[in-house]
Image (spheres, one colour):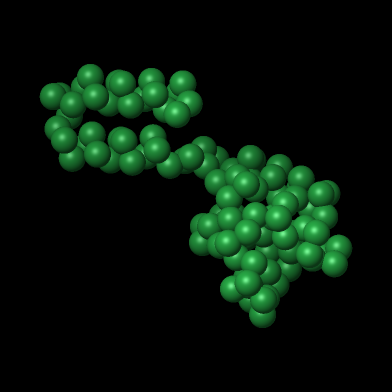
Length: 105
């Protein structure tokens, strides 16, 4: 757990009596959900509308690729050697930069 997440969780726990348990659960769920990264599976990246748009920008047609069920649980780095040059380190870096430019959740 990152220091930020741990601190946020501590603040949430300390204020539980003031905000109620329902709000505490919402804060804890938000604190536990990090922003997506290129280390997430392709399925996870395509499940989020923002990252799916980024994936389509750099890898047009990926969400409709006929072999998607075979590689959707892999990361971009894992797919790269099998992609016949369709997924390169440069493309992964560009996707990573675009994901990092998304507003924090």
